[in-house]
Amino acid sequence: MEQNILELKHITKLYPGVVALDDVSLGFARGEVHAIVGENGAGKSTFIKVITGAIQPTSGEVVFEGRAIEDNSPQKSMGLGITAIYQELNLLKHLSVAENIYYNRYRKKHGMIDFRGMESDASKVIARLGVKIDPKVLVKELSVGYQQLVEIAKALSQDVKVMIMDEPSAALTNNELEYLFEIVRTLKKEGMAILYISHRMEEIFELCDKVSVFRDGHYIQTMDVKDTNQEELIRLMVNRELKDTFPEFISHRGEKVLEVKHLSTELLRDVSFSAYRGERLGFAGLVGAGRTETARAVYGADRTLEGEIWIQGQRVKIQTPEDAIRHKIALIPEDRKQQGLFLNMSVKDNISFAYAPHLTNSLGIIKGKKEEEICRQQITKLTVKTPSDRQLVKNLSGGNQQKVILGKWLLMNCDILIFDEPTRGIDVGAKQEIYELINQLASQGKVVILISSELPELIGMSDRVIVMAEGRISGELEKEEINQEKILELASKAQEVSR
Ligand SMILES: Nc1ncnc2c1ncn2[C@@H]1O[C@H](COP(=O)(O)OP(=O)(O)OP(=O)(O)O)[C@@H](O)[C@H]1O
Ligand SMILES: [Mg+2]
Image 1 (cartoon, rainbow, N blue to C red):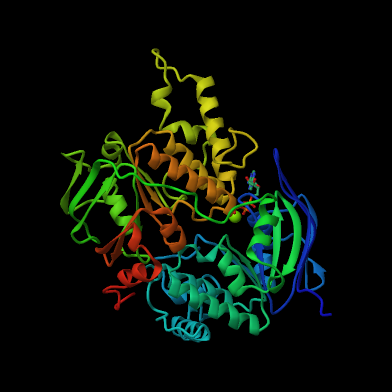
Image 2 (cartoon, helix red, strand yellow):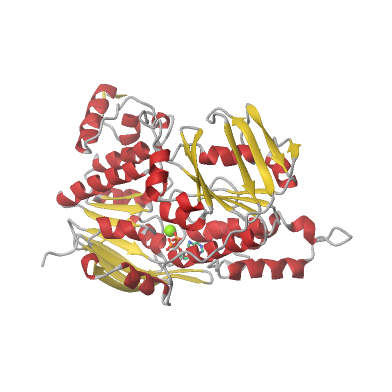
């Protein structure tokens, strides 16, 4: 049998109080798409960072083409032909596509960068992907999906042999995703080894040849995708029985609490809707349809040009998030890196930040014991994986950071909760807990608004669905009318001219 192009041998990575990887050995073959799955905090990203040399393992070695890589670093691994594409793209948005592809490494002519040559070379690399992107265009002008293609083009321009993708699908529309899959299949045929991390089971079965399961820093096992199924994978990941259905919920639509009338912003046109106590209102639409913008406008995060917001029959002025919080509106944002978290603060301080005013005694001193207790409850309730509540949030895995945001907002005792992609990057087990939590909030009489791009989730977790397309509301579906076809039809209304 041909030797694996990449082998990891006995990799252990220790952090204070955390065994992120425990003696993991695993190899990857040319011409294969190899998925790595596991719960939040299982060690997937740590494993990737060891391969790219972004971090050094405590012990163990990375063997590439039969030879151990000495003093691994991102430059070194890149030089060998290993590249990683992360969910948070690394592009320089104000530079052109060609400049990004060849950043800092295009040959010079008489001491000057040969822009013409660079652009024509960039065109060739892009053509390999089978798309048309003008190499002169600035990256910021492209949709997120196309930006991801530029990342891939960049990888291809440097003779890559191993390509790693850490949750690449999170920001893509369905079309873009199909496209990405096509490209991955082509690269596979060309003999590249591809490592693919995702929390979406369907992708594993559609795209991957092999799948390896990690749990709690341990390597569990590797299987051929064709020899396994979703239940088995989930069982190996979480090591307990898990129902793959949405928790039962009977909605009792109560009084109208929120009414949005004729809201317009730079992106939104005349958005009107109402939300009621005890009802879970879903927002569907393609990426860019205006769902997040609607949430942000209601929350006072974006400037509105026109429109009114009414709460319990009273017109209110919401111009800043502080105004929104005063009116008991919470927005649990989708983008955990940029909003909602203080990465350099502890888990405890993040969770209690917004809640702290309620915790002060008459002298204005924060009641430490109470604070700790409440934080610990949130950590348990949301199964945040952390060695202690003093751990800095930046040291948590991506999914666990998302849970901290949730924990913080749930303590604020808001009346209207807007969840924007609450389970993005969250593992299967924790998803169930978040669904239960959302249901609990609705049955306590809160107004729950749910934005989600995962249709099964939206359908399973909404009592009514509003569909948006191009900044407008294109339709509304009552419980019994909610189904995938209807949603897709409404979501693609007037969507012919995309990008
Ligand atoms: N710099 C760090 N300091 C301390 N602990 C860390 C650090 N980086 C990661 N960890 C811990 O190592 C463990 C594995 O994290 P990792 O990011 O690899 O998980 P993951 O499998 O990628 O999870 P997710 O699906 O949430 O992205 C987690 O418990 C995490 O908190
Ligand atoms: Mg990760």
